[in-house]
Image (cartoon, rainbow, N blue to C red; front, side, top):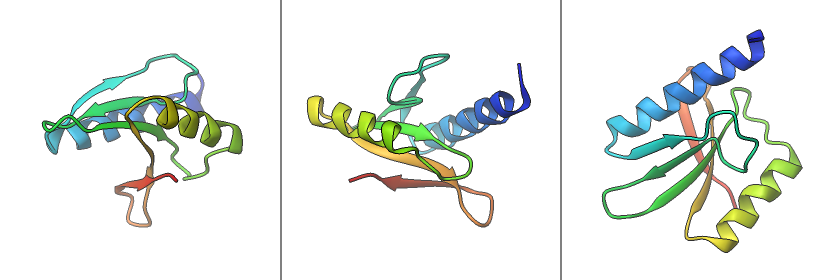
Amino acid sequence: MNNNYRRGYAFELRVKRSLEKRGYFVVRSSGSHGPADLLAVSKDGAILAIQCKLDGYLPPKEFRKLLVLAARYPVTPYLASKNEKGRVSLKVLK
């Protein structure tokens, strides 16, 4: 397992725990190359499709995959990254 993979994996788990603390049920899409790293469901049924990027950069191809997912299914696409204070930051993608 290379260092970048480990850092990305650790960040995905951090985002997952953060969402679970907020009351979401979260599933990690381990090892997949799908459009989302995490799927989170709120108690009211809202579904978040989340791509996790430590540096906050989402390549255009991955951005488009998330938008296609959101067009086909009732999910809201998000980018999870670290803010300047090192905390998890979630941004809705449009």
